[in-house]
Image 1 (tube, rainbow, N blue to C red):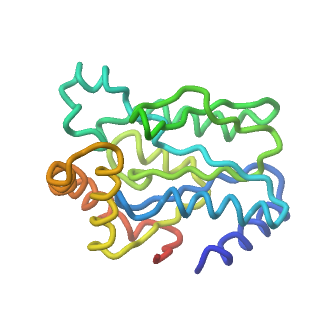
Image 2: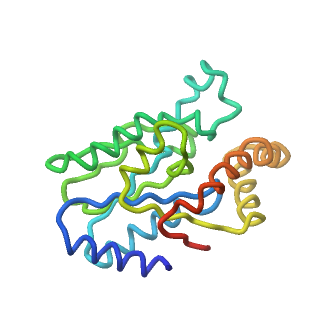
Image 3: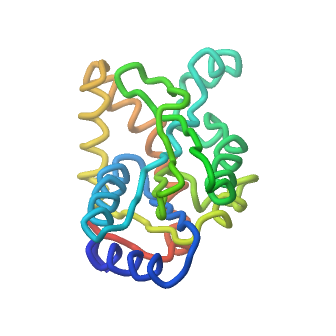
Length: 207
């Protein structure tokens, strides 16, 4: 299945039943989840389906909280996210359709979460949420999976994925050697954890 087929399928599901669909986009760090999520929202819009992104990255713990927990050097690992807060948001998005639900974003320039930056409005029929750990089996992530109607796994060749990660870290201020070390020591263990759950996705998109 490609993105256009996925958008067609979701548009048909929206037309067939009332309510709101929650679509998860999962993949290893650097696989292109955000790009896929943005393109999916755009393609749904072309099909007259109102959609919005509400990414998991808004639930990164702030650096001050990571320092308190001695986790700053593991930023991006599963324990550096407010998983229960994310689950609560997904449940609100599912249940509270008569008013706006505000969701946090992640500000890349600051490398910090930004509260209330995204509006999920009553007219949004599809909410696309991307993140690394949507299929994980550590608590409460199975409940996150249960809150989603569909999970799409984004797959990218490992060499390309790792190269993209290094360039991303350099772009946001790391020296190249430090960026490579971060990819090896932090991003790659996270990636292997995510890749081990690929078989649980409903759809696999290869980039």
